[in-house]
Image 1: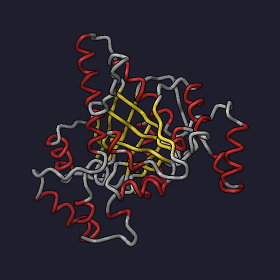
Image 2: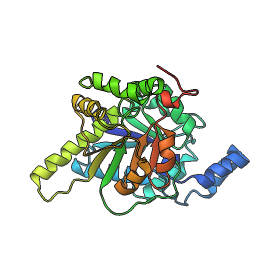
Image 3: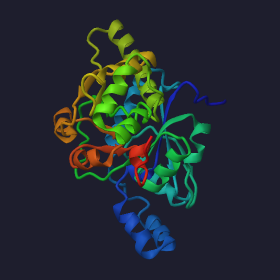
Length: 314
């Protein structure tokens, strides 16, 4: 029977983002592919430890209890550069961690992101920065999961997600104005266009998928007043008044919503993240993420003018 992905929230994830592959990667870099294959075979039954994106993925999949088991809301698919043999350890580790992931793409030495459209994916996460950049350059929604010293997979079922706005949920048009004309021209431009929604950015559709799950939570709460919402979405942006208005206008025009909005106007995002404590944070600027990644699972979206070298101007 055909399994239809078209109405599901589908996330692709590399094993490098789901698990801690530091030791495995060191073998590959220092000793080559044959030694890497031997290492994986020798450790086939050694369960891989949790990686940076593990808490996010586990919680996201847990939301499938809002639907029938035969018709899940969320599908997570492994996209891996491993070959099928070395990928066997990944699949056994998934089973050992009791993650409901059954689908995978293993391509020996080759990137798998080109299969994202065929699999209806609205997000691909990987610790391989080059793969992510190539995916984004191809117009695909991908994020580079940064290394962090803190992987906190507490038992609280809530899933907290935080998104930057420009270059993540929205396009980088306003950022281009800022880069070429400075803060005053940026603010004037946003005020002139306050009622015009931005063009969508790479993660607009992913946020739309998250909102669909939130609406089902609303329905569950209506049926059962004791139900506690598990999904919470925050917008955390360097915008402030008056440029905040266009961000909210854009979300409303797209039919999207967030639970919280932080318009920081240059305040350090790392301090806010420490208090907010999200399980994942998406931002397009490495300068912001260098601070947040110390204590928050952080994902770089290498999209737009701030990720060109040298920086482009409008």
